Structures are given as C-alpha cells and as structure tokens.
Image 1 (tube, rainbow, N blue to C red):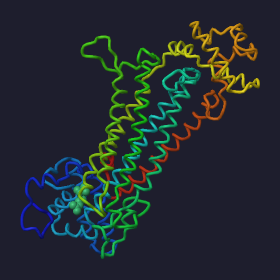
Image 2: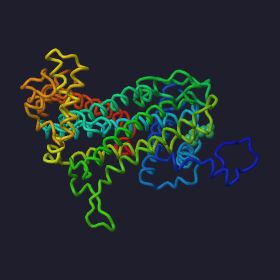
Image 3: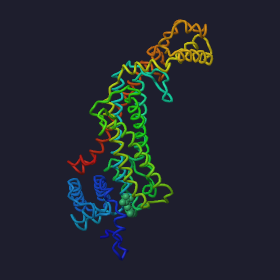
Length: 485
Ligand code: ARG
C-alpha cells in the first residue's frame, strides 16, 4: 500500500514497487535512522512543535522500534525504504501522534543524515584497521632491525636496503591513507537534517539543536546542496579504494616473495591454502584475495562517480544507488585491512635466501661510484668506470663480493684499496644517512615517529567513538552495540 502519494488514484504497479524499493539495501542504516528521528523529535519539542507528552510517546515508540529491528522481529521486505518502515511502525505503535514527527524534514534530508552517521562510524572503523596494520608493519620492522635485503627498481636488483626500511615504506603509505580519512571527516561529520525536501522549511526548527543531539560539530549551510551532495561519499570511498590499492601492492609483494624465485618469506601454514590436486602446494591465497578484492573497491568508486555524473540539482532518485557501493567498499576495505594485518603477523623472513640474493645483481655498484665522487671524480665518469668493472665481472661470472685489488687497478688508477669496503651491503646501508635514507638511524627515526602516530591516531578514534556513543546512549541506553552494525 502507498504510504504517501495521496494525489495518485491507483496503487503502484507491482513491478514498479519492486524496482523502486530500496529497503533491503538501506535496512542496515536503521540505528542511524531511528537515532536521527529521535533527535528530530527532541528538537521539535524544544521549539514548541511537539507537546512534551507527544515527544515522550514518539521517543518511547522509537526505542521499541530500535529494539525490534535489532532483534529482527520486523519484516522489512514489505516497506519501500528504512524511513517508511520506521514511520509506519511508529504509527502502529502510537497512532496519530506519529504523523507529527515528519514536520520540517523529508526523506531527502533523512537519507543523507543516515548516510553521514553511518559513514563517520565506518571511517573510524577503517581508520582503526589501518592503525592495526601499521602496528603489524612496525612490529615486523623491529623484529628484523639489521636484516639487509636487495631493494628493487623495475623489479631488478638495485641497491641494498634494510628490510625494516621496506616495511616502513608501507607504513608511510598506509599512514597517508589514515590521514586522508581524517582530513575528510569534517566534510562527513556535519548535520544535513533540516533541509527538508530541498528549500528548507517554514517551521521554526532549530538545526543547531538537532546537531547537538547527534554529536555533529557543525550544520550544513545550503538546503539544495544538502540533498544533492554525495561527494562526501565519493571522497571517502575514493580514499578507501586507494587504501585497497595500497593493500594490493603489499599483497603482490608477499605473493612474489613467497614464490621460490624469491624465497624471501615463509607464511604460517594457518594463513595458506592447499590445492585440490597438487599435494605439494602451499598457496598465498589470503594475499591474492586482498589483491583481487581491491578491484571491487575501485569499481565501487567508479559506480558512484557515474551515478553522480550529470545529475541536475537537487535530489534525484538515481541517488538511491549510492548505498550498495558505499556499504560494499567500506566493508571490503575493513576486512582486507584486518586480514592484511594478520597476514603480516604470520610471515617469517628467510634470512639465508635473502643473504644469497644480496650477492647477486651488483647491488653496491652505486656505492662504489659515490665513493669515487668523494675522491673528486665527476659522477658521470665514476658511473662509466664502475659500469665497465661490472661488465668485466659479469662476463667472468663473478660478483662484487669477489672483487679483488687487481680488478680495481685494471679499470682505473682512481680506484683505491679501501673501495673493497664499499662492496659490502651492510656498509652500504650504514652509509645511507641522508634524511629518509635506509641507514639504521634513519629507520629508527621512522619507527619512533610511527609509534607516536599510532598512539595519537588511536586516541583520536577512541575520543570520537566515545563522544558519539555518549550522545546515542542518552536516548537509547543499553543499545550501544547496534552502532557498529
Ligand atoms: N530511498 C531513498 C534513497 O535512498 C530515500 C529518499 C527518497 N526520497 C524520495 N523523495 N523518493 O535515496
């Protein structure tokens, strides 16, 4: 049956109903929808649009609905969306008074309210999972403080680096993801309710009051923008998709490093899977799926972007399509981050294989060239002298570790005996003391800064969560668990 649409003479066509219904997608927003209704009700009472007895009845009804929805005793499928479900159930529970709640609001501002309340929680969840991963990366870095390994460019052996430096590179990457989410929060954490359909309302509502009940620090300022705006979702989903892409890079390296060609890593058996036919197999499926699922996050962003493209102001029903990708990306990124952190916890380095790989690829050639620069030889000249040396060694099947004094003399008189020290990978790493380089002291600095970042970030999340929870619990005591969905 139609709840609204009093001007229509006919009931909607069945297929139209099923085509336009969104309740199975937006049902999960119920804690936020009911909370938003309660805040709106309390505001209406403050400004004199509801009697105290009316608002008490509405709030009591909303508390009952919150419990029923959590316990799953309401069948959502016969409703159009979460807003109509709550409104019609309220009617059943308290009768006519329920009809007073929808004064000064519309489903157009209600839906963005629900989405903003959902998204700020989901952002904190993702942020928390990022810090869990940061923890895991940092722990792995400090477990192997002195381990030197080949660093790669073009996937070709390039220069020796500390394994911990490599881990801290990922730390820096995911730290930026956390920072981006934090930067986006003020654009999400802002009250939309009170735009009504698009123009505002004649009624004397107090939006600042509603904002206080919902722990929003600010109120959005243009009613048309409020109901048309979805860039807050696109922005956050974009940041999450980027985090997913970062995860796919980490996952790819784990897949590479665990393959016999590299053999740098061992994954704990509990984090691997076997083959149905090949008994010898131990596959890194967790890493592969993290890599694979990143595609869905990017496609979620794309789907939202295309939904927004070319939409005229203000609300258009197209916008209903924003929820499925938003939910999917937030869930998937949360899960992938969580599993990635646990995967990092479950890897062990194969130091013997890494030590062997260090001997190949003439990794310290640049160190020798830089040594010559320190002796006053122009870098380009040094580059070609060392290039010739490498060519000779390579043609004899020898490595830089096997360099002898005679080899140096044959290339140039500019080579000095102490150059042999420079072909040692550990020495090479030790000398990379430029700010941000791979020297142990520089990595220790990154680790220290990293620890401080994690601590601050966790405090911030805890503070935000507590603030939101307190406001929610004032109206719905005992229901705090529903917030995390
Ligand atoms: N289900 C709708 C959505 O998700 C809610 C807003 C509907 N507004 C309307 N005027 N039909 O966008």
